[in-house]
Image 1: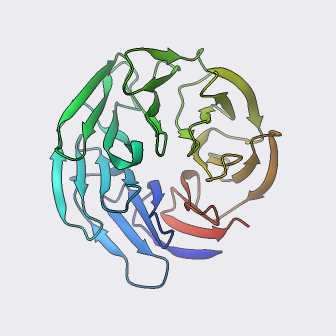
Image 2: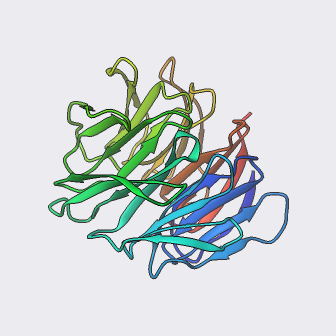
Length: 292
């Protein structure tokens, strides 16, 4: 286990670089930080005026995107060179994700504190920064997941429902309501599986068949972070019980459980090769460990 470093505030999101040698984290201290896992100094980015709530690295490693409580999305280079700003919108940006190999950038916009406030999903073409879709949601959008190379994205918010959409299609699939509004979503890299937090449990669906597979039960608090490994059969979860669990999605069983000193787990990531996991939470500490 490696303690990568500490933010001055709770960590809200994490994403590995494509080569697995870098890790990006967003924090309520207002910064996005790029950690070099080979030992070089971290790059500190202060693009947002207020808490940073979301971060994503493009599959090529060329672009870094972040979202914040300042109701903006920032797009720039990993060397901290800001390229574009989208917004401000009507609500905070809770999540960002690159879609179809990095050709598109999606953002989830909503107020997690007040489900009565509306929100939306926005989608831009990265090549020319053109906005190509804007999809309103009455109760806000709090979580977002995207297929790594394909065209599927999923989102959820205060209405307790998860929406699945292929960005070239007019139709959207809405899964049955969950027990609680999802705080986290994750999609496997091959686009086969979709996971959503459902209070203390995790709901797992087949994307292609649009059907419920199983619930993963083991946490003793609300699940607030999810991340798939590249094999699609390994899922990481973390939450209010301060535990990080590694699941086998085929069997629904726990493979391992960790009590890292990160507080309530709010951010998880898996390196593209599936060898490393990263966890962070409200203590601000960022930890990387060997999954194998």
